Image (cartoon, rainbow, N blue to C red):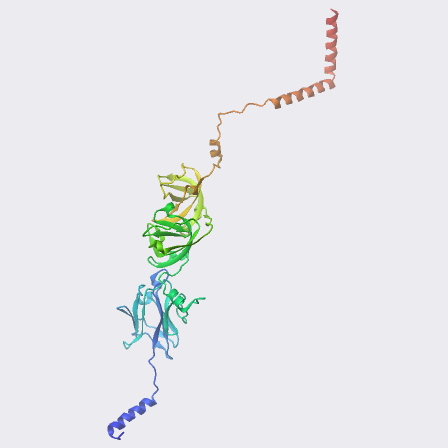
Length: 407
């Protein structure tokens, strides 16, 4: 290269640049998000990680979800440390149906960009080994991990992660948001023919088939069902099932015994459960009545009007089995069949007296009185003989008889 003034200038710049330390762009990375938390949407969060050796301020940083850009609140993130930002702090919304997300630094440069599809409830989308994947073990502020999947191939594991109907325990359905998809397994304790054309129960949860007819079911059937959680004022919590094809009968086992509860102990925690309780019949109508015990009242609804239910009267004491439901904020009990209602025998003194006919008298048994009189006479004779009175009376009687015979 000729050593003219221009070349000398360029060479000087190269030497200066070589002499100065070359630093990578100090960066925060987006490493984990929770779009669909179990319960309240306010629990959404994003996780950032400072992958540099310098402290980084989030001033003038922003995050874009779909087309909405939200400025990050001011924080200082230490080197190789995490920062977790919640929805309540930032105001962003991570849509459950999927979105494009970008993390933008103070120079308006996109630092991290990702796209996710339908978010499984309760699972986070995490950067693990340089790949984004769904995991059932959210780790806000910690190193990301994927849940252990035993004896499954990679394709099976990926299928489980992306399953649009993740598996939940029956009790967990009550914590899901309306519309959240889920798969549950349970034991059938009420059949559609017993509680309604579209309704059935596994112990702990009401099922609602929205289209088609139920497959043949029996008490004790263990079924696997997929559907969407629903929380309504009128029907309480249930799993809406779209098709009979979403119901699989796995096996049949002995139906569970109902949970025995005092009327005063029944509350919303027992919604969907098969229970047994007792009380006095109070108000009643054509297809309903109430029972009372210890100042607690429970409304009973007879869902199937074609069955021959027991004839009850006020103050009848009954033992009743049924499903707890919640309608318009009121707990109700749905018995399944007439045999679920047992009329108890009266136990109070007043009730027992009403069952006895006091107009009928038993005939008197005189044999006891005769024995007592006979014993009394023997004692009297013995006492008179001992005093000599009976002997004198006997002698006078003999003398009187002799005189009569002579004459």
